[in-house]
Structure formats: C-alpha cells, structure tokens
Image (tube, rainbow, N blue to C red; front, side):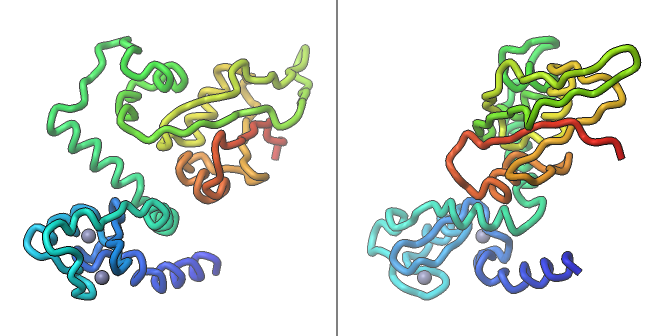
Length: 233
Ligand SMILES: [Zn+2]
Ligand SMILES: [Zn+2]
C-alpha cells in the first residue's frame, strides 16, 4: 500500500524532475536563470553550443554568452536523488568507471593506506580507494545510552567510541559503520548493533547520503547518529 502510494507520487513528479533534452532524471541539475527551466548540465551545455535559446520555452538566453546564465541547482538535484532510488549510487558508479577508464584512479598497492587513510582505516575495506573522489560528510557517532548486557561469566558494557567525529564518503553504508563499530567496540558475538538517526532505526543498505537527505533533512552537519545494542528478538 505504502509502496503504491510512493509510485504514484514519483510518476506525478516526473515532469518536474526529468530533463526534456535527454528524457532522463536530472544529473548535475542546471537551471537557466532567465526562465528557470532546468536540464542536466551536460545536456544544456551541449545544446547551447548550437543555439542560444532555452530548449524548453525558446527564450533567447543571451546573445553571445548563454553559459553565464546557467546555475547549478543543488536543491533540485538533491530532490531527484531523494525521489529516485538507486539513481545517486548509479551515477557515482558511472563517474568512478569514467575516472578508471581515463586512468584517473590510482590503485593502491597492497596494504597502502596512504590514498584515503580515514576511510580505509575506518572500514578496513580493500576497495576504499573507490571513495576517493566522493563528496564527504561529517557525522557524530555517539552511544545512544549506557547499556549493560549479562553474558556467560561476565557482562558487556557498551563503550563510547574514542573518536566520535567521523568524516567519510557519503556513499558509506550503515552496514559499513556497523562493521567499524563492532571492531572498535569489541562487541561480543551474538550481540547486534543498530544505528539510529532522528529516532529512526536505519537499514543496513542505507547510504549516508540517503540518511542525510531523508532523516537529517539537509540540515547543517555534523549529522548526529547513535548506536545501541539491539534488544534480542
Ligand atoms: Zn538531460
Ligand atoms: Zn526556458
């Protein structure tokens, strides 16, 4: 039911978030300041090489320098990424493949943490170099509340993270943060963590970008996130 409601909404939104030049969702949304029509950046730049008019309304943008009347529209782009699941991740992947095809990504040598030390250390992820060109986000990862669990022959106190403030790629997923927490907080096997933002329990496959847009609602960073032990089902 909920899913159906969402589908209808995206359909209704399509005329506002689809580029009339390529018929795809806006990528690098760019608005013509003279008439406020929006296109993908690459689409409108290409169009203006052969015409100086807005492709949507025909308004002459500028006699000689129409490019000066283009502005990146970050709010629109964020709305599109928020509405269309997977678009942001797909676009990041495409950019990464582009960089790779041009030889712009230097593969790190085995055990070389220099390229992106923060992420590679934090996530201990051999593919961390892939995050090198990403937008970064600052977050504060704090303990939700003190928790003590009785275990066989002892107990476990959920510790506070030594370094709460983290700066990392917006493509990092909740499951990555959990892996890092499990390691840093030496969470005993059998206990599971959950991460919340604005009282919402976050799914493993959510990216920081999605959380920033959906839960944090674009507010200034650091984005506050909390971890706690999941109560046994
Ligand atoms: Zn386009
Ligand atoms: Zn126009």
